[in-house]
Length: 141
Image 1 (cartoon, rainbow, N blue to C red):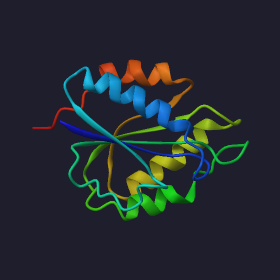
Image 2 (image 1 turned 120 degrees about the vertical axis):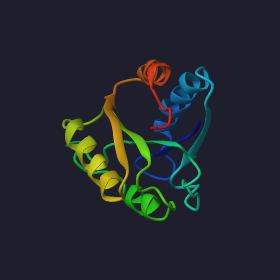
Image 3 (image 1 turned 135 degrees about the horizontal axis):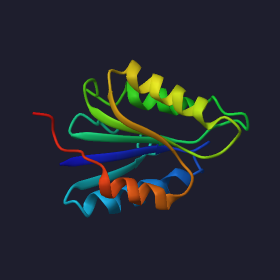
């Protein structure tokens, strides 16, 4: 399967979610899948239509949570045909209300027609590796 992991930090220079994406990739590649990783800020012209499964990760932009970077909406709206794509949403643990941040990310993804199979708040990259090893990304028949 072709999987992509896209991420957005608080700003163009914040690459903190990249470590989580690399761990997802290690876990999924161990299952025999091909994984590409994109930064939403620097790879803004990428089309995701080609991929069978999409992982979207971000961080809260405020200490109280509940807000995600504006680039997430922009990137997903320009990412080609993502409606119906199976996907996973994650946010890194930070701020006081990470669940609110995750809920907003999920709402944005569902607004693009993406089919959420899993969502989580991840405390450290090791948890992304464990999840990547057991994540089922096979096509629906």
